[in-house]
Length: 107
Image (cartoon, rainbow, N blue to C red; front, side, top):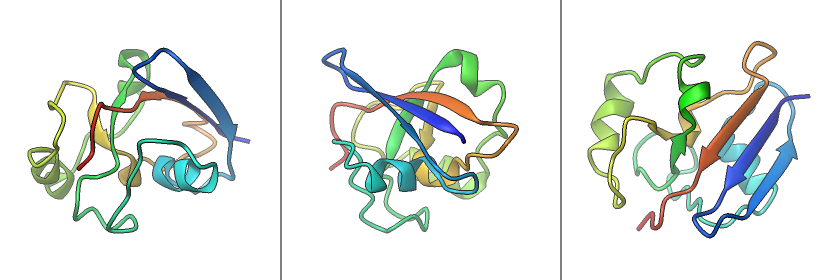
């Protein structure tokens, strides 16, 4: 089963297991992870599920498409090289473990 580790800025972390095919955003919502607002419900239209993907994991992911890239320009917290929208990160058998840090603010 895929695993996602959610790191908070205070240094705390929570690792959750989720069904393959779900997004990192869905994993956060299903497991009551603090800091993921997901106002649009995963339709890539609000940027309130912004996360920073660890450098080690970033290379294993497909790059952001044009819509996600555009939405990342609208994030409240600073955009960084590892910035992604968690609604666009799908957990699969190939990408079965990810570590993400939740930014200071989403809205």
